[in-house]
Length: 111
Image (cartoon, rainbow, N blue to C red):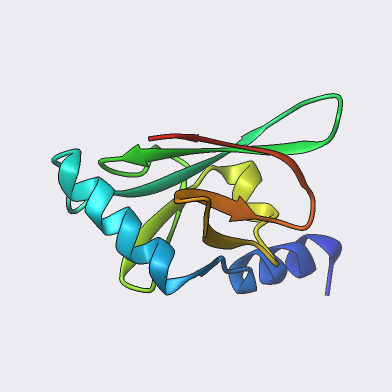
């Protein structure tokens, strides 16, 4: 097995977890935004301090995004974020959606 095949297998197995309360809030926010069939898009942010993620409501995935359906909500992840979602959880933090990720130094919710 080549390194490329191992990487592809890891990426296919990587899955974000979604706390049920976070899923309910996300569904409500999508309905309020008029895009009940949409989802949450996770974009990777580069920074000198480490990994960061931007969370936004989206009507549909962008080209190249990976789509996950967890707890009956859609999560779209850009190519870089999709490679690093292992161990990530979408949770409620002080009444807002946030990404609990072991490598994140910044999570920005723009919804």
